[in-house]
Length: 129
Image (cartoon, rainbow, N blue to C red; front, top):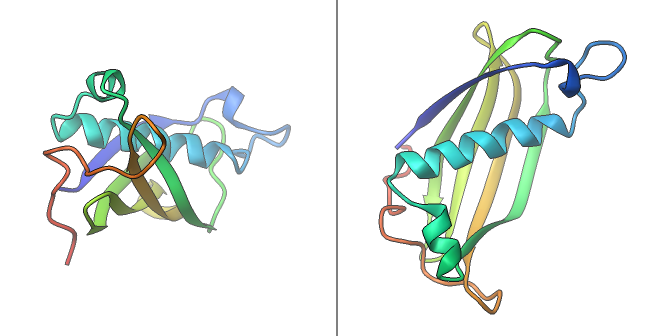
């Protein structure tokens, strides 16, 4: 299941030139991933109470064009691959139809001892073709 998340660039997201500081793209895609998980019907607070959390184990990012103060952004999240304990997502940040940033992100489900565990029910979504 793909997901779209809208946000905008605030002053706190930018450097002195009014351009988004590179690390803030990771915040944008993190927020979009949280919304994607919630959209699947998964309660992360309930999982955390059971000792299960999601951890980013790999990220490959391409910074293509700058976002600027006041820009309205669209962050898309699309599953690419799913295994028993991991999901790989393609995430993209766009402004006015132009791709500014994209990342391939791998998440692992970790149990109370920090070891991989099965993804929760509901995360077995169909990857993109």
